[in-house]
Structures are given as structure tokens and as C-alpha cells.
Amino acid sequence: MNETTIVAQPGTPFIEVVREFEAPRERVFRAWTDPDLVPQWLGPRGMTMKLFEFDATTGGSYRYIHADDHGEYGFRGVFHSVVPDELVIQTFEYDGAPHQVSLETMTFEDQGDGRTRVHSRSVYPTVESRDAMVAAGMEHGLRESMERLDEVLAR
Image (cartoon, rainbow, N blue to C red; front, side, top):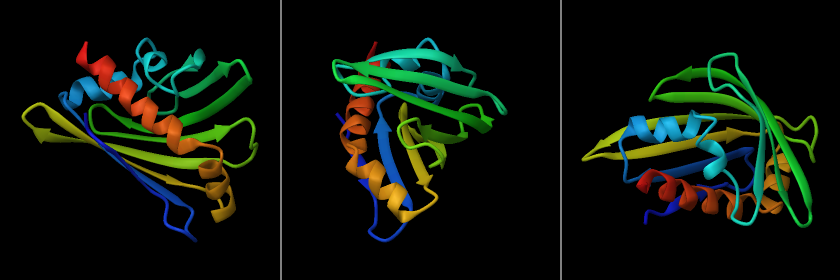
């Protein structure tokens, strides 16, 4: 299994994530953008996902809720640019921190031999809002999501 690299340099509003997958770029991109596949991997283990809207096209939007025994956690955003198999630029907002919208850019890089590297860069409105996301356990959920994505891609 590949490692997920997460970098959140102190004093900056950025989070960088890099992960390689043992699957061709087209399959990774499809898993990232197909509303039938996204609920199978996005979010930490032990949570269910209710997908209300997911239109991964330029100008489309998404809205979903993760739920567990402790409550429900809503998320939403807009897809600003989607280039099949190459790029997704979207906004991201957690309902528990309204008006703290981040801009996320994901690139999908063909590494040859059926491998793909996904590079994500999130830009938050302030260092404090980025720090709050990190403190809320984002790293744990992100790592488990990437592990679950590996499992979906292996099927």
C-alpha cells in the first residue's frame, strides 16, 4: 500500500497531499468523480455517506453528509474546472465552519506501468481556518479515504 503524504507548513493557509495509486489514471479519475463510486471511499471508516448532489463537471456542484453515532457532518462545494483524467478544481466547505471555503486543485498524473499520482493543494482563507481543519481530524479522515480508495480500485 502506498503512503499518503500530507504537508501543512506552519504559518501558511495551504495543505498539500500526494498519493500514488496502483491503477491507471482513467480509473483513479473515474473513482474520484463518479457519484456511484465516491460514497464507497470518501470519508473515514465507520461513517456512512449520504450523497445529495454530485455533478463532477465544470460548473457542477456537490453536497453530502457523513454520519456516525456522534452526529452528521455536512460538506458542499462547486466544481470550477474539470478536465477528464487530468484536473479537478473545486471549492470545499464544511457546514460546521460556515463561510470558511477552501479552493482545492487536484491533478492526476500518469506514472506509467498503470500507476497514478494524485497531487492535491488546498488553499484556505486564513491560516486559522486551515489550522482548524487540521485540528478537526482531517488527516485521519483523509488517510482512511485514500486507503478505502485503494480498495475500490483493487476491485
